[in-house]
Image 1 (cartoon, rainbow, N blue to C red):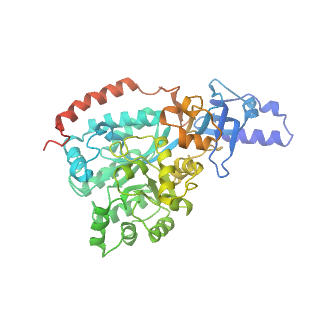
Image 2: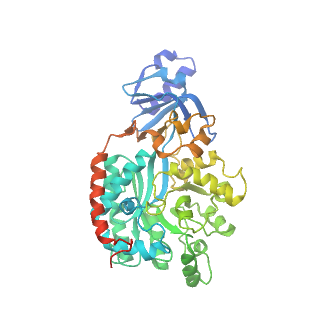
Image 3: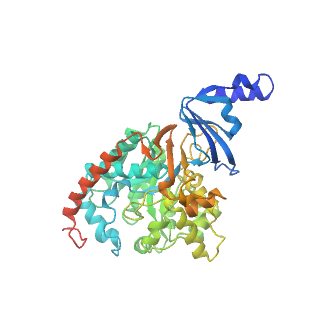
Length: 469
């Protein structure tokens, strides 16, 4: 049944021109019943005994238990009081790096001393495909329905996303030195343009540019990408204001400007930009970020693990900056599910603000759903359970020992839940995981292939953990 027909029939019934029974039994594709529905709409409406109706790839109705009587479906999920909420949105990661997880976790200056040399040895189309397949499964099982990625051979990542059925914003990396899929930044831009052309009309995949960082690209490259992104109307994802190295290099280049002020000064701070990390920012930077309408990806676990600091994310959120949660890559935060970020985001912001009331759970959940959707400029499509939005929905088990009892669903999600509590994951109206079982890909085969690839990794990394030169 079309959304237009649903609304028309409901409106006519409401006017008394048609008995409600004649609207009853409208056939739809999916009905979710007996749910504690967290809509995450503007009013943060919660239905204690709620129902969500899905037809095609969209939500056609959300309400209380009486709603279910108006529809019929061959697929009904009675979730027995479990939490039903919008799918989580991971605003920043490097999904294919799953195959490197747990390597050199405590090496100082790890990016330059370890990760770049490791990637120079091992990044290939095969590695990207294998790592992305593994990471996609991890995210679906952790309730992530949409993610934003930055890496190489993003057309390979796109194939894995298409197959599993997820939604993603995929950024092709552009960097000034030679990498696996480009000899220089210009080749990286051309690779990105080809990728954008290939996937520009895909319903679930948004192709993007991903200049690695301001200090690993020239001013001219950053300006060119900013211009092209506006022409092509595609996102630009970048690591921004992340490290002291970046801060120093940009200050030298720009006569003392901060990374954010530098990006603004060269015309590269705009609505298409999504800045990951944003740790080293001041009030003037935040004002520029808000004015530009750019998005921000807040990656708590990766930032504190690397000891780079804590982003003023709470201040940005409270000032209506478009900010959402991310995990960073699986070598950085070691997990790809934003549900595992919740606890740290809430607690660390309380600590740095020395305020137990800071970053309450409802703000954390908002940043994981609507906030993340806003960061990616997708809030008209995803991020909340509302009529007309795409049906990206997850169900959280409230019967697991760590989730009993649930007096406050937001608190339970932030302080008690983990990624293993996700029961069902639905993207675009299609069930990708039901009762923890993957339905669209072979999880065992994907895991087996990833484990096989670890033999290649082990042969490149000596016992001490150093990369073989």
